[in-house]
Length: 411
Image (cartoon, rainbow, N blue to C red; front, side, top):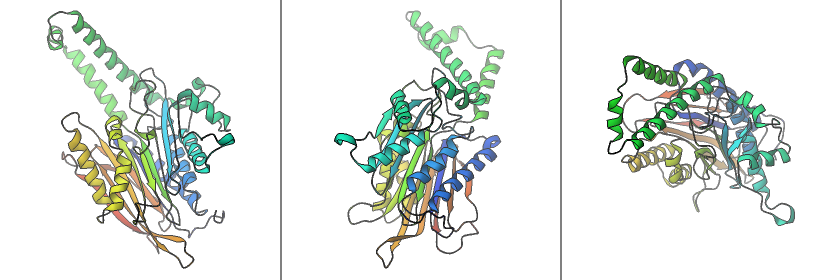
């Protein structure tokens, strides 16, 4: 481990996103502030030296999990039963270590548990040669965290007093009523022989008041936004990469459902080695329609594509996103957001790698995608809520090369 005294000149890079979905303008100021604080939290760890990427990722995501305007930790979407079940994962590019938790109840910061799992994975076998767990779910994940000394609320109920906000509870009630009404309508159609659901519906048309009520419900949900998985990518002074993801999951999900943020190769991926003969450090985190993105191991696919392509992260990001949408276009309309970072290093005279620049790319097809980044030679983090401007399937791509040598105060 390098010197633990923070070095303001030590090179590093942090990139993050707060999900693909819809971020209402009324929340934009608060979300941007949360992203800035997360970048700064990661940077304070990375300035201490190489080998701290996992800690930096955990520090940044904890800030996002604690913010009530983001769908991770406090402010998470609620399950069908009205509870919070969190997903999170961390991957270290240098060792390949991975740690994840899925559908874990009663925890404020699921990323803490995922980070500790990844660290223990990197250490290898434990007592009596037992293999350390990589992925824990449900109550078992919570008990394991407590056994490792992670401070947690005593009960799930106590945790949810903090995790569930007034805004998320209000949104849950609207969704829950809509679900109950749909189930009642389906039951009614099943009891009427030889009639389609369309016929049953036509017998009871909505009056003006009901139409107005449904419109108000839609507007209430739109005002609160539809947000998804958060992700962070950290690069240290030697070009080592670690990535993490965290999410409260989709609204009204079935209890026990594990989403994209926890799945290996799907929500996040990091490699500080690259394919044989192609030494490259790359990290990716993904947000969107979980069940469909999981099938393609999207984060891993993006990193491999970027590593092998001379066109870099921007091209890899666009190609993977377009292929995904084309594959699913006949089944369902999906949303996705991809954040991809590739580090450019050179070898010092002593044989150690030195970070000199990064290429960053973000592609999305959702209404909006919140992202930000920060580097050692920037005055402050640069954050933005990117918004879709046209109706094209894949028309939104942000890309930049950030030189980490010298001043970048204009960024």
